Length: 453
Image (cartoon, rainbow, N blue to C red; front, top):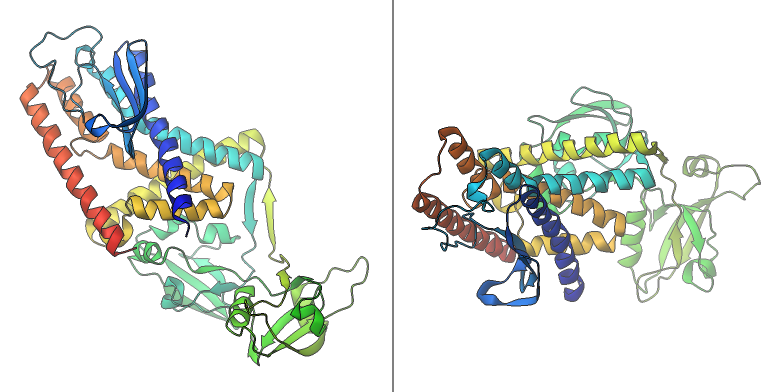
């Protein structure tokens, strides 16, 4: 993986998410007449920054360390650990001089903005692309070593029920919300017989460890095109053919075909394929080729790169449903809600010990890898990654941990309840302890990233 590309997409993702988060604090602070001294993307530790400019009362800047950002509001005990205002009387523009309800809104502004960003991404993608629905009748392709193979599923199995419910599409069967449920059972059809398999309680950490589900609808190896002067076309294999076996081993998915051909670079292989002459107005499916097509067995010698010059024909029964503006808004809100529920349930499993903390939590290195991988798959994949990371950032920040927004929220809520400000020394000590804990946690996660890539 290209290091520069990985770093670029990591910084881009952090820049977008941190800007949205800090903008939430900034706008709500300005709304209530608070003075904002600094607005920084990235941290400017030791006064190290890439850019700064003062506009009005606020200094805007980009710090050298791209691991977050901050908004410094006058009169607020925050991550800057500023003590300059300790022995002075609260001024009207200071955070500490405002009513508790206004302070709570400012503290929640960053989390709210991250949730809004995720929802807007979901709404925009749904509005432009519609909702994808792949028929559950498509059989499964199960990767070797995947969680689903360990559960007992095999390539060719078909989903029938999930937790006793019939679901019409793959998207609903593999809904992330189901993966965080207390119990998860699949009823599958294997060669006409129904079998029930149960998911392990730590399925999410195992999926994270393997960086994917390892299951998807089968993509029949139907050839879309044979490239001229390449091994397949020179051997007589035609576009529109269905590959059913290589060297006598049955194949049902395109991945199997690619894997076997790549493993036999420069070696003769025997390909069994079915073909029907195209007739105008007649649709030829993989199933029809298999049952009505004429069988051929052809010897092909892959190139030194392990290729024979064929491309895939998309044959999965999938459709995109356009929802319109109203439907897209409802869908986007629903997707954000479900992703939030899944994230909360995932944290609950981590804290209860059901999921492996080391495998479930990723630091900057893991995030950078996922950001780069999603960007390589296209802008849609990268935007989905951004929305999920934005929700995770929001939920992490609202946890009642000192130095996080949630910890500050609790302290200010207590002040609102008791009707007076807590002693400055108490708040500063809590903030210092929180910062120390967060730095220790960050160090642990970074080391975990390095030794558990």
